[in-house]
Length: 277
Ligand code: BTN
Image 1: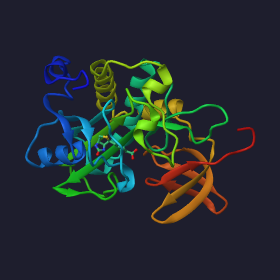
Image 2 (image 1 turned 90 degrees about the horizontal axis):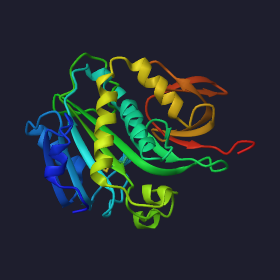
Image 3 (image 1 turned 30 degrees about the vertical axis):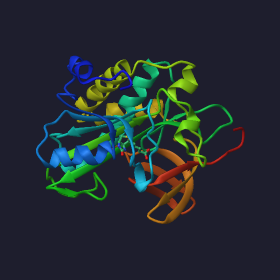
């Protein structure tokens, strides 16, 4: 399969790949990782598949996962209180962005954790990677990870990462949105084991400093393409428009609207075209 083998992944000796569950085809690595976590799989279990038939993204959307991409889910058992679990979302975005930069793709983070290739005059950008972090506290999946108001530890977090790597944008079959791939940006294919190595090492570094969240957010600010923009945000069926002013110390998006400032922890952001773009 695609150059990735269990042995090669094990030889990376990553603390995020202590147990490797490798597939040629699966429904969703996310569901498999969740089942393994429920059955007691340790922190650092990685589920990876060449193809996903039922890959899913945020808001229950379909996530096209043909051969050539890097489709994986990690079982994490973080030692942070449940109400801090949402930090994983931004830490993961920073880690994955840094890995993509190492490969020569200047990916930008769209709040909260989409990774885009953005050209001048193209405010929406082209998505190259999606991240899905789902927490489970006491075996009850949190609807809005990170919004818990108690100090329970998350039982586990499943962190799903989908990188459009060695494929053409058309292979992804998403006519409604613009997408990019490593191949479309670099004009060549990459070694998926090397990409995984970079991804796990950058992710590991960001997750390790999650308690120093101010530093993670500073890097998020440096790498983002949302702050300062006029945006439309859809959240729980409500549509809000305003200026994405900053992140709060908790990582919420601070949206300045004509009615006042709002802190958003959840939502789908659309970058609006503004003068000069
Ligand atoms: C998003 O941007 O909507 C998140 C996409 C997450 C996709 C990855 S691919 C590996 C893992 N398995 C899934 O079914 N989804 C995630």
